[in-house]
Image (cartoon, rainbow, N blue to C red; front, side):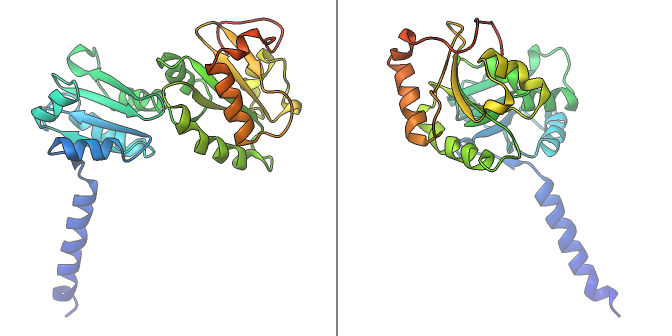
Length: 254
């Protein structure tokens, strides 16, 4: 008689699966702040109820964009503390101290595909790999200065340099966004050319200032944390303005 023995196990497994698939609920400000601080990028759905417009669509999109943790908050006191006044889907980012709000009453259309796009575009991290999608979030950020690591994926130094910059990036939160440009991707050759480079010249590090449309290259040499840190500080102190720009001529976008 195996069935009586297996039934409790099956019931337990089903309950666990149901619990695991349920969204995390943020019941107070302390819980909300802890969740927001738990990852580089998170999304929180502020809803009146489970029947609210966008609720089910957000749950679907969170399952599809597994790199962005998601939670739900229905506590109006928490809403007020976080600057939310109506049903809203908000992305919180550490790299630029940003809160990107999608106010649902102002959205013409709300579906899972659109929310996946919203999450993906705004997934700006301490080191964000540049592509046509992430470019939108990068250039929409209030932080207009980009520290660019240009390196070919597949080379021995790729992972090491990416991890090195990821450790350095938090020092410049809200001042510079760290961006990785994979020189092995054909669509990124234009970005390299903007700095007068080809994929054979990599790895190199540059700074692009979107506010002034100016750009500079770190002189050739080891791409060490110390050199990159000094390069960033030189920009912030205004010392690079007197230096010759990289590349042939300025452009308005990478």
